[in-house]
Image (cartoon, rainbow over all chains, first blue to last red):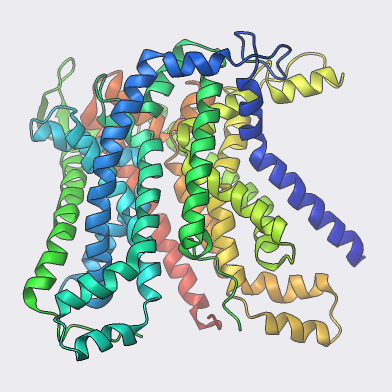
Length: 269
Length: 290
């Protein structure tokens, strides 16, 4: 009986894994199809859609805008995230739990709600749909992830090191700059990479806060899908999946994704 | 474990570290406040200006065409959460308990990459899988199993299929975190007393993972309520969830006040559900966790 159940479990896991990875695999295969229809499996093969994806003007603009918004978002979020994570972890101050809750709230607020909110805020301040609005929105959205990443690193710092520095006469700020910060490097770097990926790939909120001139790649892709039905998008998606995978492999090397996502199964010694 | 608290951090340092955080918090609150106050404003048709304060928008929301969207969203969220739980639990179990490193790595990769790939890429892939000439219809057709293509696109079924896969990573991670907190000693004790692995699972593992089940299901439910890209592309206007309605109202009708009303209601609904979950989970805090 148990063998049977064991077999069922294994099959279920395998099938579910297939179900979860199916879309990505299908997209990559379709990207190499030749015909201008979205069909699967393709009956002729070609790489021309990759060429078209790279050359398409809107996608280029989207990539440039994405890079602008993402790079600003990343460094702003990293600086603010590191300081905030440190402050919340170490300091006591009035209103701490409120601040913590507010900064973590983007995790539960729908992205479309954020988008509409920022859009209305921007128009209320008479700002057009400029880069600034998009950057502010993105920073708010990625901050919780940066903070989480820094928390992980922070928790792993041996407090004895800080005490040693302090006992040698270092002022708290010096301890932070010369002890904590270097030791936080993996968390900060991991957070930076996550912020970058999340910001570059963000779609829903960005759709609301960007316009024709500031639209990022995902938004440009959305516009494209509504007009054309050829494998160019498949090619572009394939490239984005590849880039994201690469990024995540790097983050994993640096920090270990399991820890950031809190599924470390080494709780029991 | 907190060695250094409060006492010897100079005031200026606290200030320097906190000011950026406070600025962001203020920006976020400002955005939500703008949304809030807009939901009480009157729309002036054909213009982006807004009128006076009114409660009319909330009354308007009770019209069937809008209620229908809320109900359909709740239903889709419910089905999504259910299937996510059923399919995600085995994955989470395997992720935590399996002895095969490759399996664990495979699950982790399959789970995490979609989370970071961005809505549009993930949703678009489903268009190819579900389309008339797509993967499912293509394979079934070439195997001779169906005569004509099955309609997946623009149906609730298609949207649900995509939504389940979309939020699977979150469910797996939450469940895995919960399962990894179960002390394996309980399971070992049970099996040393003669329980078969199945009994151990049903009577030990499953009950102890209840916080994870609740947390995962409710989180997915609340999350799915906010879905946009998936119903937008795969629903194609026929399957509308709250987010799609908000987008339409905002960008097709320029009716931002009403869009704000709907957004606020959805947000309130989401927060209510999550708060209820918190209360529900309080009961389990007495269970031993690590």
